[in-house]
Length: 87
Image (tube, rainbow, N blue to C red; front, side, top):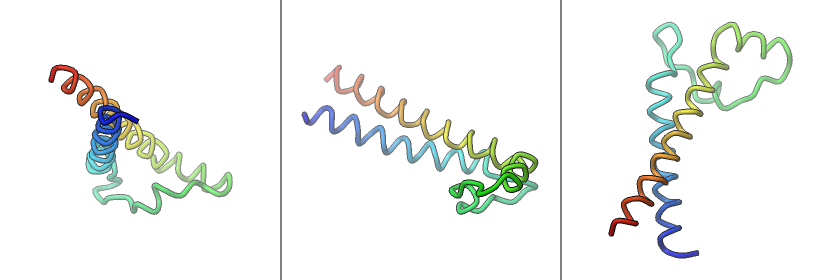
C-alpha cells in the first residue's frame, strides 16, 4: 500500500472518529441528558426493546450519530486526498 493511500485512510479514520464524537454531542441527548454509550452500542435483543427504542428516539439518534461519523470519514478521506494531490 502506498504512503498516500495510508495517509488517506488514517485521515479518514481520524475525521470519522471526530464525526462520531460530534454526532454524539449534537444528537445524543434525550430530555436534556446524554444517552449512555452502552445504550447506543447495544442492539435491541427482542421486539419489545426495539419498540422501546423507536418510541424513545434512540434508534433515530443512533442513526444520526452513525451518519455524522460516516460524513466525517468521507470528508477526511476526500479532503486529504485532494490536499495531497495538490502537493
